[in-house]
Image: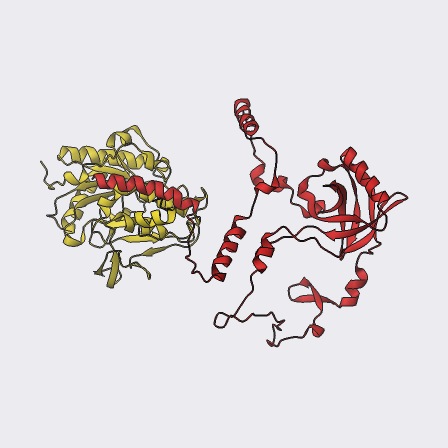
Length: 268
Length: 294
């Protein structure tokens, strides 16, 4: 059934979303770009409660409540409250960054020197036509632990990006711009941070050392998703669902106090 | 065999907790869960004072920085297990369906309603006109300080000792001190009020700073010995009730010896009161006295 499909690992995409080449100075490596990241939550559809029929969205005019067909929809940028500058599709199309089919590499950096905070999304890069240049670049990056840093234009945006090795393939990871990430220094709470005492720090270091290990992403699973999947399976079998409310942390704390008080009151 | 926490909670209390993580004291980020926990912890000391008294609440469902309200009537949605009593209110000039808090569940339910302050009348429903406490509200008007109130309260204590009357002291949780005498239910409010007023007058003669008359209540720099609360329909903040102050102070029962040493009322608050070792008012209900000057 449909559900089993979802619990399996993500399917491998068949069609590239982009093709072009990695350019390093005068060298070109022809590549195809494939989607690699899927944010798989559980998708629900809105239905009408009384007859379970799917509901759809309509664009409704806020002035007269009329449903507006797509052909009459344009985009507006709000410049002041209720004041818009209007664009049609062609005008925005013309402004799109020129997708010149190149991933331009400016320099090579240590892959681990880029903070993951900036990582946006990743795409598989596969060789296009010839394998030779591709495997050479991959081998060099693997040997040196380096990544090519550069730029790529995808759809309506230009991204900073890294080309790096991942499991014997080249992968393109698009990055966020520095100005799109909050600088933690701006949080008031972090300004008066005190320097810990040496003994405190030693203890903390010991705890961290004791709990140190290898990171394995396979140890992690979305428990919410798993539970909902179990519920869906039960529903498909026609079982009735009993709603269990999980006890919140706060409730647990109150239970401790309650038990103690009840004990005291019983003594009286 | 093993209950989950939810069933456990149902077995321990009838109350269904709501919005536990809502912050009610913004300055100290005190949540409703902490308020409920506080009232659960003081319940063994507090419940005896609440029993059979129609309560008046100050509720701050959106925290003490937002608007709160006094509540006498049991609100809509009061569970059927909460005891209420319908009485005519002189001040409201109508029948009011008062809440009675005779058990732990009701106290927890009140806390869950964000009833920060709980006020109690000085008599119980079975003898509404016969108070069981005489109440001196020692209320300093700035620049008179808590220390000024303390000196008047200590002087009052000496006086009551001389009369052979055992008195009990608590912080109001705000500016002043409350002194109580537990009494047998033989006197009217008129009599207890006259008693407190008479002693207030004596104190005002002996201390420049003390005043005893209603007209002097708000005199700057004076300590008013308030006798007026000894009246039908008036209330006193219940021992161990939280107060609506930024630091979540508590109206805290104390030993006279502590007051003599000097205390800071703000130090008695939601986080300190639950760990106070002893109940200084333990014997208060076994010491109901006659108002006779021996």
